[in-house]
Amino acid sequence: MELTTTPTIEGKRITRYCGVIAGEAILGANLFKDLFAGIRDLVGGRSATYEKELQRARTIALDELAERARELGANAVVGIDLDYEVLGQANGMLMVSASGTAVVVQ
Image (tube, rainbow, N blue to C red; front, side, top):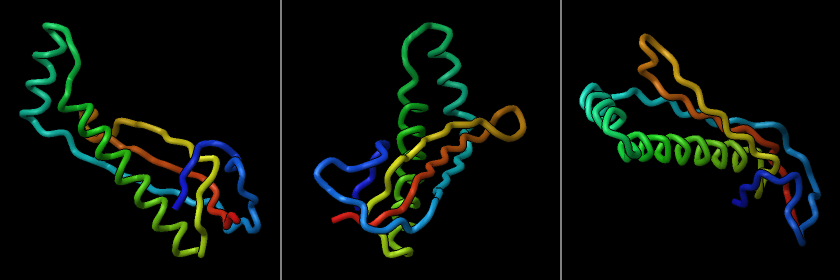
């Protein structure tokens, strides 16, 4: 499954459009992760814990997107857009959504 943010795939021709699809991942933030991330924010530096969670959520959303494309008979997804949101009480949840167009390419 080829996944791209571009509207086409260089060297390949889109032969069929299967539809607009989306994949989502919503992950809860852990109290201890929040505490240590807050300490890191106070002293400066990057929060590796949150970066790993963002990467994990993005991977889940893209995997879900690819699975939906396969269900439609597609072999690629073009025009992918990734969106990030915080949700829930005290912004305790992280949502990553990926959307794009499922296509068949040759």
